[in-house]
Image 1: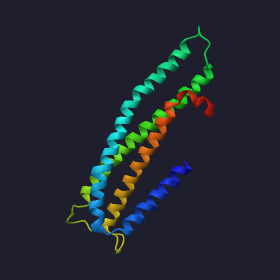
Image 2: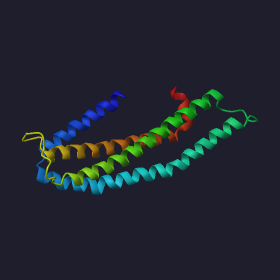
Image 3: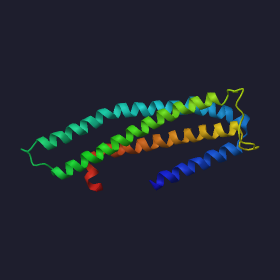
Image 4: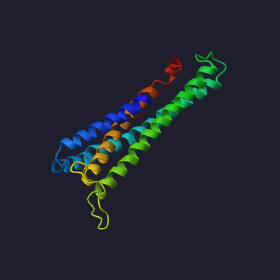
Amino acid sequence: MKSKILILLLILFVSFSLNALIEPNVMKPLLEKLIFNSVSILVGLSIAVVGIFLSSINTVYLSIYRLTKSKKKKNSFSDNEISVIKSKLTELVDELKENSMFSLYTFLIVIVLFFIKEVDFPYLKWFIESDLFTKEFAFNLIILTGNFLIFWSIIDSMKVVFKISKAFELVKEK
């Protein structure tokens, strides 16, 4: 949990720094390219990886089911170890699901914010009087932070996928 908070703070710091150091007229095309090229491809890849990997997860669950039902053979895992594997595997699958859904929803929010930032609402005025923290700066900060969080979510998903691939070693991590 501490590492996730530290990563969030680092992402906020990097987003704020980049946004403060890069001119707004340069930031706009960079965000367009970042969102519509790399992030959209990575979110699609993340969803594809989850879809493809679900069949492998089902195979692992089937193997666990066979281990619990085959009492004729000498099991290499005890019932307690199998239940530990099942619970840890379920936790990893849930984390993978959360990462994928987070990436997708954050991507949708980033796209909506990207378009809202360009709309000039006639009766709404930016409430902060500052040369640095303008409306455009605030939207760019949120969009950059969202993009970096998507990147981190995808990295975390890849870590989870590799942990799931070693499902029967989960007993050793008690």
